[in-house]
Image 1 (cartoon, rainbow, N blue to C red):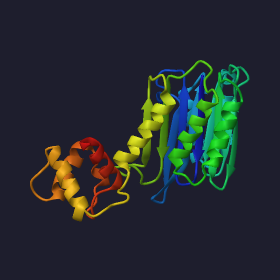
Image 2: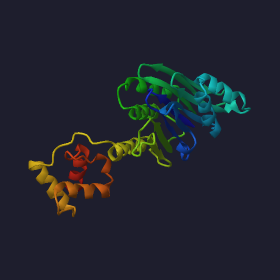
Image 3: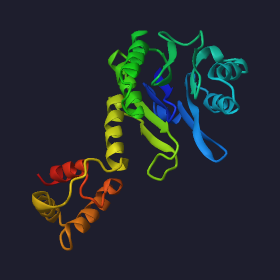
Image 4: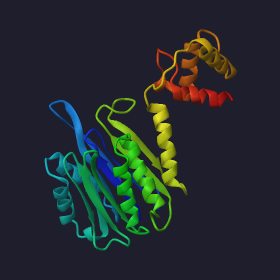
Length: 282
């Protein structure tokens, strides 16, 4: 009932998943950071699905943190479970990857895993329209080498959806990515997005990722608030009721209301903030 990709590029680890199941993000994905001698590092990521067992993902990453590889982690957590043939599990670590599909998982069910210079991945799914779903996910992951890690995960998920995805349809999707020092509070959580109930959940997840980048990405393409641009921004902000003081103060006030604080720069206006201001006043 679910298809997912679990991956790491060495600096980040995460999971993208979609399913005809309510709030799949509350069950399937998990990713963890660790620390050695005060230095934070990627431990790995995991996805538990089919007849999902929540503890699988926690226990698997405990094994990774203990120095074992992904295949060992899967062997250990499945060996102790009488219902393992009804379950799927994908695991990636800093130097290993593996996927498991129990023999009793509903057709089509299976997975593939691998590694290259751009990272490690494990892709798996069950009740799919066919093997092409995981094949296209793998191709999308490999073909997107060089793109931002979180974008690669979503690209793979969308490729699986386009290939047919869950044979029963769409309902939910999720994206979880961790990376040392990432996130607006430097907690290490780069992205944590969930679409719990939507008839086009994978594409809604992609839309939310765009918003996540807009709200939490750093300044890009900053242009000075001078000359014609300074006049334009001043006039547009005044249209929205932000006037008085200098243009930088008015921009800061508006950006605070719209949650664009992460993109503010003392050197001028961020290109995406400018686009949003223009859209709001056209």
